[in-house]
Length: 445
Image 1 (cartoon, rainbow, N blue to C red):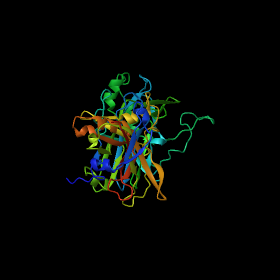
Image 2: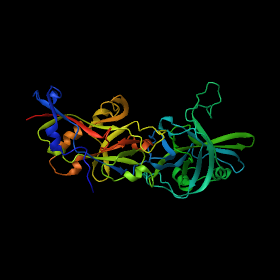
Image 3: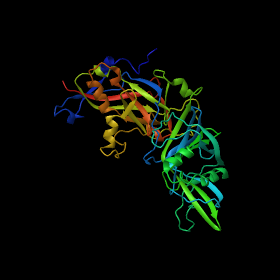
Image 4: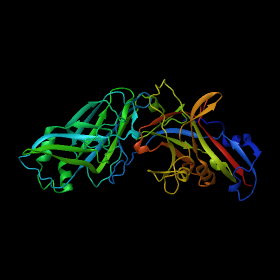
């Protein structure tokens, strides 16, 4: 395969590096004051690759939201996310009687607006299914897994309004807090099945789960670019509510989303520009995508040829591109991070990211970067990402194993599991805004 370098070999970069005296980074040198050098012509190889499967099970009720929808992206193809979930009875032994009469049953889903991506001005269709395969409460599920669904329980065509607050469905008081949610009517047959379930199965969670199997929620969008909705299933507003009458009394019973739930991600890149760049070394454009989409493999093959240097600052610089007359309705991902492999299938945040997040992992990304910001270059506004790689590059310099894997890391959309966002970047061969690694370093001998 032809290798395209960003600009020459590392040795040539060292000869061309600019030197000037400065105390920059002197605190790293144990009071030794030396010159520092700068270069942005390192050999860096970039490859767009598919993301591995991601753990999407939420057995601890901690997920902020669950993605559900369909994106019809002119640059990335079709992306989908479906939700699979068990239900939890509000109370065991609900005490249904044979004479109880079902009035209605409805699904209520609370939006989580920060997780929504795409065009909410076009109508979508939501469908709910009962699973024919068993969703296990005690197993972990990954983004590439699915369960068979047979019986459709309900559907709704609607226009998403994720920021429009409406009345509390459970509190009619004038001063009640309003929420953003949707209601989906479910079939009478499903409600009657729930009310007619054997009392023993209604008195034990695992027996109830074994009988019901679980639900699948799917949202389709025929328009371009479509939309990926986000529902907070761990919020108490999200539930299935059953309305029934006993004698002359109107009663209700609730089922919540609990025990286990997960998302299945699907990406169809055939014929899309992004698909044509997968596994190509140093393509013209670099495509990154959340969910189970695309990430960027970054290899600095000659980093170990540096000797006796302290890395003052290493920073990856990417410029947002808009090829193929992309309509621009899908905004660039608002956060990128760097990861590195630990073993064959495990990836962790790099030390540069962890330093920014801090010990409590709540410090944010300001010290790392990875957020698109406008820079003025030659009187032109350019949307750019800058990602700190100082410690990661120092580790590569210090590595003596000869293993190129130790000089490789990855760029991901963050949070990968909970973001449907994507971004397109100029590749290293761009004549205007090439992807590059900027390096400031100090010789210590």
